[in-house]
Length: 87
Image (cartoon, rainbow, N blue to C red):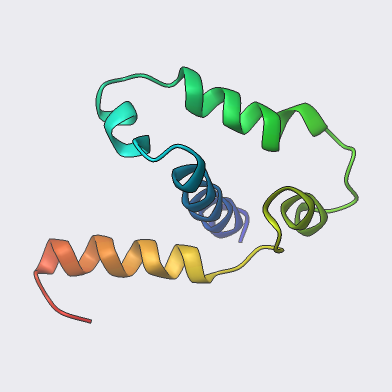
């Protein structure tokens, strides 16, 4: 379950990072991670063990606790494109 939680968290963080950094995908493709790393540092890394749970961190920094919707959206997009099916 830890890999699943990590993947779900990553999908949610990516969603919110893309809202703050509109050219997120282009930066990754170009290997430009400085702005993304700074965003992660501000929202996640600098807090260390400040929060009692992952949900508390996400709710304070992103406005909602861990939400599987973002991971489901990621998987649906990835595999719909891969298999060229409409969902």
